[in-house]
Image 1: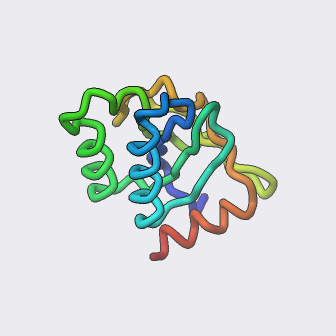
Image 2: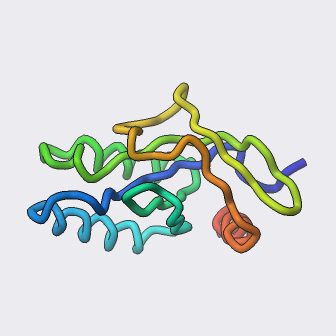
Image 3: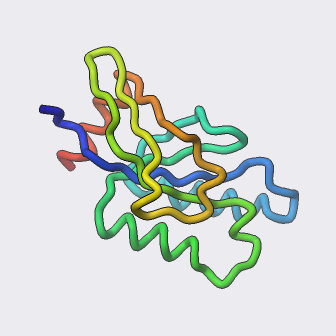
Length: 127
């Protein structure tokens, strides 16, 4: 039985946003750095932030995604991922379109967790 969460949330900040949106991207990155997370850099054109799938994190991501700011769609997306495979060498989470998601086209189909991030994920669960 895995000690990892069955489901995680992944938010993406799109770095390829235009110049006038760079401040928004920087603000989102600053904010995400203040919340317990794992930074994952294998996302195309952005940085992924892995969060535990709990009520507080879902509310935060929904709140950001539904801000009354039309440019949010160009720089932000999130989706939930389900645990697909957990071995001693690697862990893979795959998209779950039946759960929470918003503007998910920035998010990769799957997330591969390396052994270092696997330990961090376990620590997030304990904290």
